[in-house]
Image 1: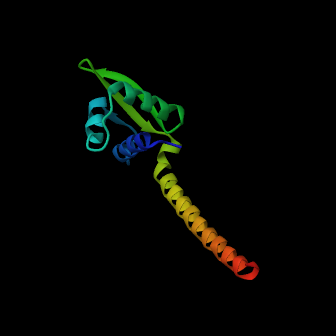
Image 2: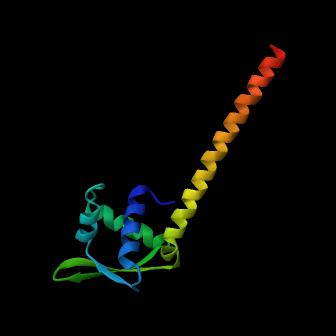
Image 3: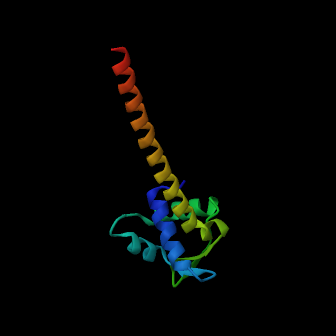
Amino acid sequence: MLNNLERAIMLLLYDRCANKESVLLSPSQIIISLLPKYQITIKALDKIINNLVLDGYIDVINSDSKGKPIYCVSLKMKGIAFKRELVNQKKNNRYLLIRTVILAVISVTVTLILRALFF
């Protein structure tokens, strides 16, 4: 499971890598894209990028361009299926919510029936 910041970075990388084999991004581009909602340092971004690599979502090659760091990012199979995974997770969350509400209603109904019968 990815946390909210990892999910936001993965969505950004997925959108940038859509229909491309790989894409070049600087850490500052990623940070600027996340700024309205998230404030993140370059060290924290590096850690999250490495976690995404370890989780099997992306491949990253670190490089330098004019003395500034650049990421060459390509999606792995798990990264390509990321959007589908999000949709499935939302469906699962809806199912769990509906099931919880239905079970709560049944529980209250049974409690009221038992209370009416025995008290």
